[in-house]
Image 1 (cartoon, one colour):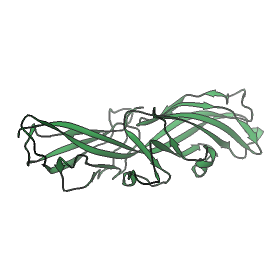
Image 2 (cartoon, rainbow, N blue to C red):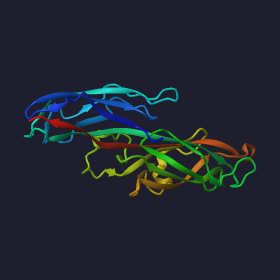
Image 3 (cartoon, one colour):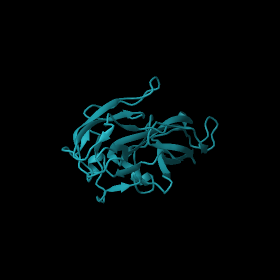
Image 4 (tube, helix red, strand yellow):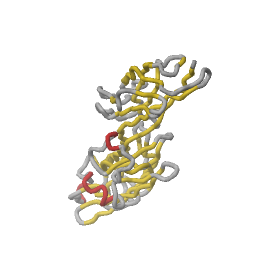
Length: 276
């Protein structure tokens, strides 16, 4: 998918005059596959040299439910910017840009069926090769997935997997090595916030497999995945697909879920005309 939260500035006046106040609405629609909790979206004025507003930040006071297959969009909310002052001296005929900093926390889920077997080339399923993966509609997608092997080690079945992460659009995504990061942690000077990165929140199975508490150990030493200049990254993980496997279980396919989370930042703007 290529969707997340969409922002649209609405109800602005046709013309502005220097020293005048005005109000407008920000329409916020969830087009993605993750339900956004209350206070997970933060918006503030970006060009405060031009405009003055009494509140520092506005946030969503209702959850925005994810989009489902039977409707075109998910939840919708409106943020009201009332009595905004246009403070920049300007001449009639000029234009100015009303700009907003937008930030929201989001998650991506990738679902794929992999082979659990003591032999990489089994009779029922094949543990070597590309697998079709479903990636939930979001600003970041899991675009490719491969299983490299499946081997019995002691009483466990282990496998090496490789998947590609790809950012959709021009927004900036950031992450932090914590379970509670959100837009309140977006301070770009913080050493704990990694720009142009996502976090692997979890890798889990329907069966008795890998859990989230060892993501950093199994995926190259870190749960934070840095994206390259193209907004992409390839991740290799060595995972346990089954504990306590016996030959009586044989080989079978199992549903694997990969969860990514991140904070999405974007500046949105609308041109306004000035009458003096």
